[in-house]
Image 1: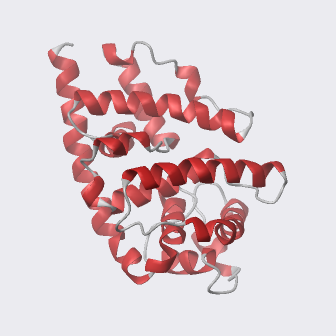
Image 2: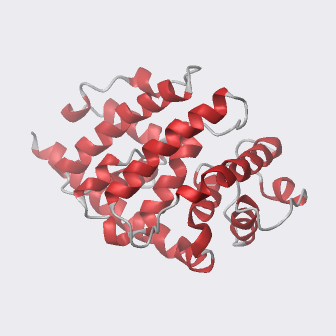
Length: 249
C-alpha cells in the first residue's frame, strides 16, 4: 500500500468522524423526544439525508416522525412545503409508505440505546426480507434500498457508543448521489484500493429489491476496505464520501 493511499484513507476517516459528530449534534435531540418510535424518527431524518425533504428547520422531522409512527393524521401541506430533490409526490409517497411499513414492523424494534451491533445487523436482515415480501405483494411501494438503508445510517450516527465497534461494518449503509460521486472521484484519482471497483455497480438497476441490495452491499464492501485502511469504521467513511463527492473536503 502506498503512502498516498494510507493518507487519503486517514484523511477521509478524520473528516468523516467530524461530519458524523456534526450529524449527531444536529439530530440527537429528536430521538430523545420519541424514544418509543426510534425507528420512525430515523426514517424521517433519512428522508432529509437522501434529499427527499428540506432540512432547514425541525418542523419536518417533528411532523414526519409522528406521522410515520401513526400518532398524527396526514397534513397535505407538508410535502408541498418541504419537498426537495425528487418532488412533492415522491416525498408524499415516501411518507405514506414509511407509515404503512412502520406499522408492520414496529413490534420487531429492539431498544436501540442498549442493543448490540448483532441485534441491529439481525434487524436489518429481517426487515430486508419482510420489505421484499411487502413489495412483491404490492403492499409497500416507494421504499427501495436507498431509503431502506438510510434509516440504518441515521440509527448508527446516533449511537456513538457503537462508532468504534468493528462489528458496525456488517451493517450495510446507503450510498446515494453524493457518496457515489465520492467513490467515482476516488476511482478516477487512481488509488489502488479502487482498482477492482466496477463503476457499473453504481448504475441504476431495475432488478428486484434483493438484487439492488446486493449491489449496495458490494459498494459497501469497498467503503469497509477504505475504513480498514484508515483505521476507522464504515460509518465515518460513508460520511466522508458524502463530503468528498460534493468537493467539500
